[in-house]
Image (cartoon, rainbow, N blue to C red):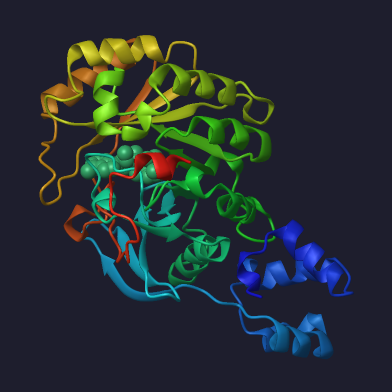
Length: 354
Ligand code: SAH
């Protein structure tokens, strides 16, 4: 039993099953995640016999950092090895007033978005909760305390296709005994899995980002193939329900929109986007396309990006242009690849979407 992946509820019921008191769970969470200690013998308040039992019957297994690369802009990318030989990437992006950790949720990705390097790797498997939260544990240990102020599930994979493992990981990120981040500072990003968006609204307080990238079904079908299953109208309705659900009161959806030259960056696109989002409390994050070998796309011109941003801002939307970070170490959006022992190559949309 690997205890790294248990959130507070799971940890409490595990201890109860063992005939122990449930407060032991809180002590253990604080050791593992709060203090970053994974050596049972150091957990002095647990009592000798309990510690011995834990050592015999459980383990605390983490992904292992095999390489750290630091960009000239301070962005750090870690390559982490999993037990089965797969490797994933995790990125820390320091900014003046915050530090964002970008975490992977799957080994590779099955969604096959046309402009994303991760898609080219194919898909191997879902990460376990331990492997997701393990990335946070490792990053915490590498950085000074307090530097991680935000966590985004924007690394490799589609988090909402790994729903059951992602939810307890989110719980740990927001649990005061573990990482204690505010719910506005923990963000799940999705390419648009409509049923899972509704489910997320019911079970989690985390914030939502949606990778939109197009304003017509015609273009989105090509860029984000999951759109053929859940077209824009359905996606926008789900987002409307989500952001007006009880847990989300007063918050906004973050829309990610990659700017690709001549594909989705026209003045008409900007105007359509304004109309599409009109009922949804929104902020928009424009992401200049990050190149990778063989992508076949080009980044929008600065003039097109400026014009697009201005149109959205004039319509009253908070709109930022994501600064490209860490591209010299291939750590920027859409550049994460790890090492995927792929079981399926792209073009398996139906199977992946379930
Ligand atoms: N599957 C989830 C989580 C990945 S988030 C999702 O799609 O939201 C990674 C973000 O980077 C997504 O918004 C993705 O669309 C964007 N992205 C992918 N490739 C990119 C590229 N080459 N340049 C810029 N952004 C890219």
